[in-house]
Length: 571
Image (spheres, rainbow, N blue to C red):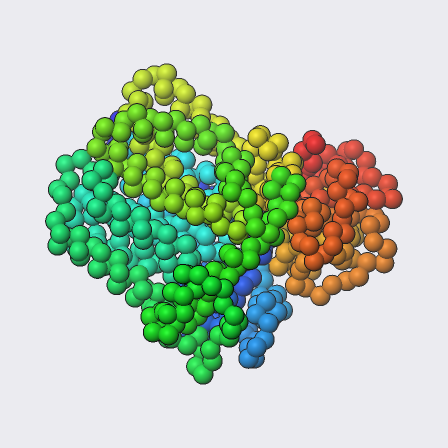
């Protein structure tokens, strides 16, 4: 697909500008999500005090990226006593000692920039592999992808890990084209950044090793790497990732001087636990990193409360992420991805397209299969890294048929079916996006919950809903890490899972009742399902993902309901 240089620059700027605008809209529109509070607090301690005791179950690099935006301001830091509950300390740091709004605005900004860099990396890779037209197609698919927009402005580690993985894959692809020491070093460093952000980054190691020796992964015209070049790449993959992990911990073994991280004496058996124990005895990696790995192994063994299409499980389902992929992507992205994969297979004898298929398809498949085999099924974000890979696969696979006018017309329609739903989802928030397969956002809670829909982010939308309806007070069943007080929400508390001090209701389930979908659907067994009766009836209204019920009160008149900022989609 050809494109003039004069048209390419403005098109790239337009797409990047649209993505930046959508990310900034989400940055200001979404409240604090469940993971952000601990990542912000822990990241600040990591960066300013070299204290790695907080949140050791996640590596520090992504949190350090978040904390860079907090440097230079006189934040008040409460004392951190030995053995103090980390979530209680994080709540005090974010909501009590400082302005949560100011912290959140700053902490989210680096992730917005990382997301834009990820999109530009996808564009640059597609341009080098297939040309400017295909590069614009890849950029368009990434720029308005609802899941990338949903997580691309949050102060979490998901997008940073995805960007580091994509950078490692691109560097490996460049090394396969020209096996130079610089590309080998960049591959190792980027892999280390992925592993120092999320432990799933290590999944890429086996992929890169296979791609380095697999003939089909070598682009057209690329020289065959000799034994010395491959040995150098493998040495970089062996040495540089651990070095990056050590650097992320400031080359400190102990998380805090004189303190270790206590772990249960009865560790879960298995090869992974044995390897962690051996690495700890030899001090191959920082203690906090190894304890984070131990926690993830144990967490993966025990599982986590999960929800899928009305069923609840602690060990999950093999088809969970297949369902998530089907309902959380736009119709246009599903169509373009399917067409791109099919055309990539049809053009498998073309060395250039075949190499791209291997370099993008293998990491995407490994991430997807590993997530599906695991027992932690609490959000589509666990497969977030596959989306840039799929965009690249689709763009480079489709590109060679776009000389035909009919193909261009079909692609334009598919892109409209991709961009349109993403743009329309902006006021409600991209985290709550579901396509028509799930019945749209109004029915998404019947298919998926947790960070697919309800991550505590919708208190600002509830505040706007109350103002638009003239509702002065609500009974609130909230699951999340935000605080209704910072939005002026006058409320009584129903059973929930939150960090702010509770307010008991005078008479439960009377008046305007607002409930988080996670609580309504009984995801958490410890609450003993207090909302089963409400689940039997459809909500009277919605404030973002939050369900609103009018119980034993007069409903607002129709005109007021229509004036709501968050109007209810039909059930």
